[in-house]
Length: 170
Ligand code: ADP
Image (tube, rainbow, N blue to C red):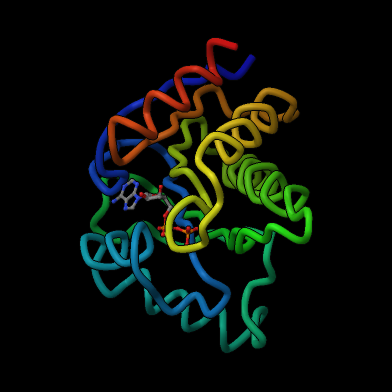
């Protein structure tokens, strides 16, 4: 059984085996969670991301997939980078958002991670409505077959925390 916990705060301060990054497909940094992870985690993370771009992911990490690097100076062993879909009102991309959570947990299993901290993927710059993003996050983690014992959603502000809390209680 995977327990689901909620925390309000900055994901770069979370102690967990793995912290998930809401990355973009370049893997070379960006704003939001991505910017915060590289700022606080230091240059080792970016160095591994560049190496991934030079090898397995020459064209970038596809949307919905996940890959791990060191966590550098963060209080975690690994960062799992995943690329959320950009919200579209005309096209249902929820399968890709669910895939981010599922693939991140699959990578966590490969690593042997027991605790994983997730941000609310796609709900920032990528524009996904928070309530629907929370629904997909919680449903997908609940349905996942994983050896991860603890999933923690780390929400940046009170509003996001409350939306997730309603979904977890539902
Ligand atoms: P995306 O590009 O996938 O939308 P963002 O990083 O822009 O990713 O935002 C994802 C979510 O993470 C948003 O809800 C945003 O408010 C939140 N967020 C931004 N910075 C942090 C942080 N340091 N810790 C936790 N959550 C954060």
